[in-house]
Length: 250
Image (cartoon, rainbow, N blue to C red):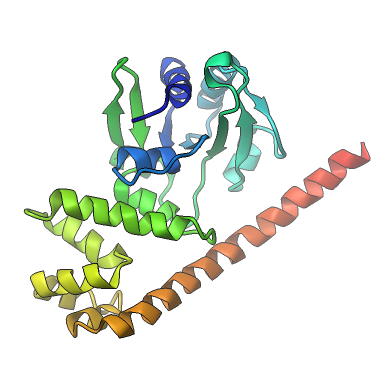
């Protein structure tokens, strides 16, 4: 269930016709891996007309930019996030974080074609990253994102385990974070598992049913991705630090 303040944010985005997709904790709620969050993380189309629509939605929410950088296509195109805090009484304190580029994830137009949509009881249409794209976007250096990855995949498995299509099966095998789930999948779908060993070598251990070997292999895989995320953000953080220093000198 989406809390009323979040619903107010989504309603403003919808009524202003902003082209956006949820990509954070609120998206996880829709996909059945509930996570309480007062943040609304969105990926947006960084074009002038869409940014104008976003500004209209922010004005409805009495949202103010609370950090550098400011809202501009230049910073969004470089991969920065822009942060806002809502002051409208119906959404007071809700934070909105907007990005247009995500590490390791396709561009906006591809994400838009693959999006999932939900309609809220009041008729508000909410756009979400597709589940595979959300999982990729959640592969960060942050500790809290990795348990959520596991819950997202396990929730999808529980909903669709009786009759998965090939694409969903490949998704589970390539992304599952639980040794037990990987062993179960390998036993149920041995041919599909064997076919993916080249792209995910730890599946060999799942085929062998070796839970003890899978645990460190999954930790090593996670740490590699965390390191990639740290390397990606390092130069962007330096840009933000330089921007803060320039503002402080004024």
